[in-house]
Amino acid sequence: MTSIITGDIINSRKANNQEWLDDLKEIFNNLYAAEIYRGDSFQVEIPTVKEALFTAIKIKSYIKKHKEIDVRMAIGIGKKGFSADTVGESNGEAFVNSGKAFDNLKKQNLLIKSPWKEFDEEINIAVGLALLVMDNWTPNSAEFVKASLNNLTATQKEVAELLNISQSSASERRKRAGLEEILKLEKRYRKLITQKLTT
Image (cartoon, rainbow, N blue to C red; front, side, top):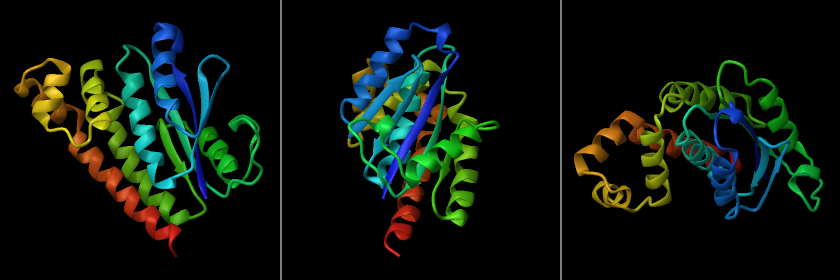
């Protein structure tokens, strides 16, 4: 089993391309295989399926810290099939599911499609609710989420120091970003996907 994230940048022309491209490359440098194409679209393979939603949330935080742009993503989970030199030339169930989910990105900016219908229904309802907050992250909120996800063991005080802001500002940004609830969702995803992968 593997997972494929297919995505593109919303309103990419409204921001400095090089800045968000550099951010995407920073994330992708630590991942298994990734490809940026057509200027503002990308595809990345996350072989550890449990990490897929965490990675998507992280990508969202990196992009939303830039004003006026956002990102649409579809996570496809399934068997890999053919493995080529680049992620764009590979294929299999995970790629098909990612493509199908991406084609259905109309009302929300993040969807998950797996071989398990009941899993998809439950997790996509939860993701849709989380997006009510995530789609409205300000650059400050997104920056806080990014720093927190990159330093998961750091205390709020340490994240505040990293961002050079007061602890009260950090607390406010954490609350406004809905970070605690989003991390609970991510933990729930891990639990559900682990159950599916082991049965």
